[in-house]
Length: 302
Image (cartoon, rainbow, N blue to C red; front, top):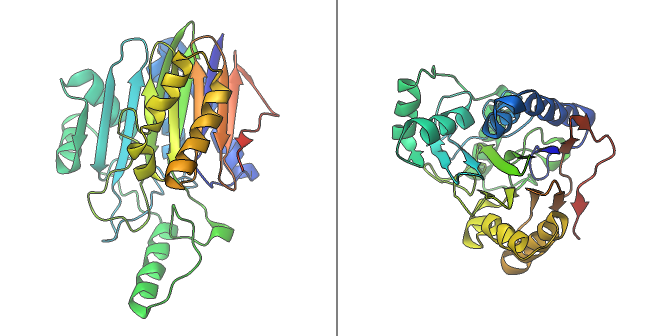
């Protein structure tokens, strides 16, 4: 049995354009599955990095200085190998740079200017990932800060909640023939300090994969790091919990300990899956053995 599950981020809309995008991502992952689970996870995430509706790659949010800094990672559950980049700039597919870190270096994480320089050495051309929408959001937020006013915006972007076109981390979990993999990518949090790194490239924080299962998280990154949420989910799988139970328990835990919101995807090596969140919305696409599940809805934990 093969499972590919993709999410578009905490609080991202579930309107047709968003759902169509996450389904395209799942289809791309399935098409790449014969090349391996890492390839499947990477290709799924690349689709969302190319889509300005989501806070990853093109369309990422801007930091306090008005720049895009992105994080991404991949993990192979069978081998335990991990590759990540943090605070990388001016590349269209941070997840693919993370794969190069995994496969072409002895390291697991490259950050900042070093990550960007490595990307150039691997042939990744400079790409401006700032969209007009994100630039306008940053300018509005800057003006409001200087003016001493605040607006009701998404905690993950600077855009009004009512028409927020981009939200937190995107990610994918894959399970096939008893093996698992995970991939994740994000532009981080809106108006973050330059150099801030969230949970996406932190093994055990926002992502984890093992011989038991694969996990990706989205939400307030600091909370997921401090609670090692992805690693906690894996420990629940080790105890024998179903992925759905594990996802729900982990969301309840991060809320109980940190008052944080987010979402979690889990797929285990037994061909089971789970998805839970405590945000207003959480777009998720699920494919099982190449068939898209049209009626799948992740469980909302109140």
